[in-house]
Length: 125
Image (cartoon, one colour):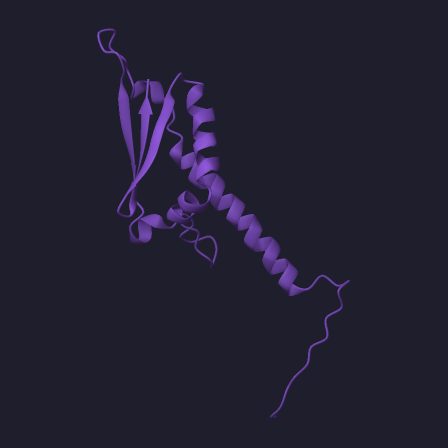
């Protein structure tokens, strides 16, 4: 059959577009939370043991964003969320959440830098 097919959507019905948007947002938030959790090192004071002779102790946390390493949700959802995109568009929120987490351990997030496709988080004590 040639020609146009018209679909009339009732705005009061729960349609597929709305379901897709809700599923997308749910998976976006889930992937973002997984990403933030991956940046929070459990027991970070073990990595940043400060010698009394030293003025400061630092640790450089390397995050690879090359090819498949950039993808957070490799299997769960058809649309892939990337670490590099979160770093690019949610930098301030990431920095805030990391500051909040590491401050519990008396550790400061000095800076987050990008080098090529990789990111480095410098932690200081």
